[in-house]
Image 1 (cartoon, rainbow, N blue to C red):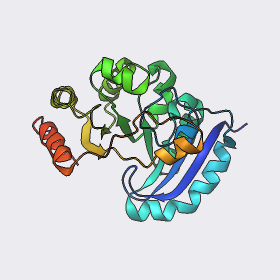
Image 2: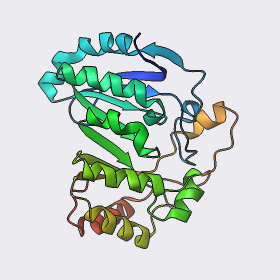
Image 3: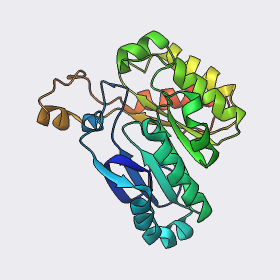
Image 4: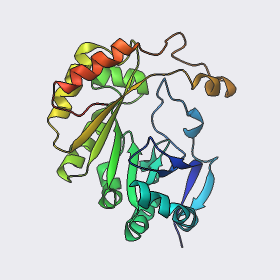
Length: 243
């Protein structure tokens, strides 16, 4: 029987979550509670639409010509997709067999043993490192960053290409020392292809309000262009490709 997962939504022609044109599958369920999360409706998995690998593959095949023309493929995001690792592993295995590029968009907050098979069929990982300072990470996300950093090291050991994503949040992730420490850490990893500095935005507020939830970062606005460029310059000092 085909494995199944709880699905939040699908984007069929995404262009920012990996190379080329991508089929992006957003899964339900997340162990983090990021204060700037713009999809808090993904946190709980039980109310998602259950779909099988066979059903998703049937949809994905419709876009193979776009993938081939653009160098794209499938990206599985969330929520946190490693919570449903068996499903993603089987999905990626079938994609690989059909020559479809596979990308995992994750916080890396998982047990390594649970995702080894999944990673065997993963071409690229988009890894969110929310904060390099463990105490600040816990304050921002509700969990420590130890698992994420262990995951990053494992990816290097397996020589799996990684794009790092770092959301620049004023008062939470824009401290010069924190960014310097992040650059030092990333500079020790040989498999980092690029680092993306993503300016925090307030687009998620409406969803929090629609769910009758208090938005924790109310009053914090997007960082200035100067602040974003400063963060990029710090990271570039560590021989990283920064965007």
